[in-house]
Length: 264
Ligand code: GLN
Image (cartoon, rainbow, N blue to C red; front, side, top):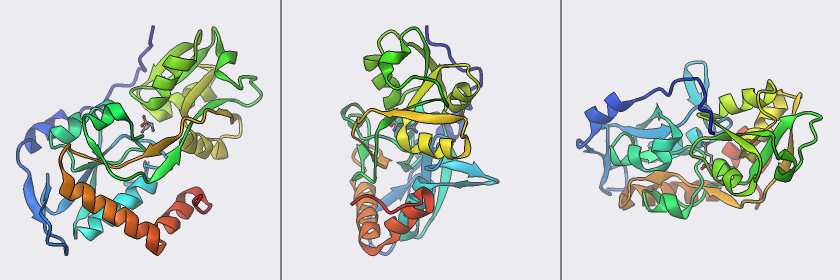
């Protein structure tokens, strides 16, 4: 019943094998605390592209709100951030972190209880809610309007879960990434798509033939994830987030990507 998207998932399994079991204590930073990094001299971040404005490719670079926040952590550790693009499923399940594929996962990822069992989250750094994207003029303004219609969901996400619980009677069509979901809505392959409000509002800015017709008030908060028990790194991430909120760097980064000041 769930149609998988046609695009192949790009696996990074080879990297996993190389890195597994060989963490190095790479950075003492200026803190003197003992933070082990999977690749010495680098803070390796798992993410799933594209998810603008949180992470996406711009030419050869990967840019976005999450990228800028993790850069602050990297710079506090005196290392450079290196980003690994990998399917969201392995990120949210904790598998990639456990396989030492990365030190942190930053992927617009919602903090929730199930995930907390498999990885540890930083303090929240962003608030989000699920939202509905349609072609402009389509009259789907609630999940109840989608009975018998095709609703696009993104694999492994809280949006998919929300649709499974609340979009009774809709035909859920699963996509491996955000770009495929957005294109499916725009081209009429599906009737609507559900995903986080931040990414959908970002999309409609450049795609006026689409619109966001509903928000579902799911009260989500994003966290940066570390391997279960990696308290040294988690605490450092929290320290950097706290400092950045206090000294204006968080606000500057927020404005850069969202054009407004964060809600207080
Ligand atoms: N916030 C959603 C989740 O955590 C979507 C994340 C994403 O697709 N990158 O499931």
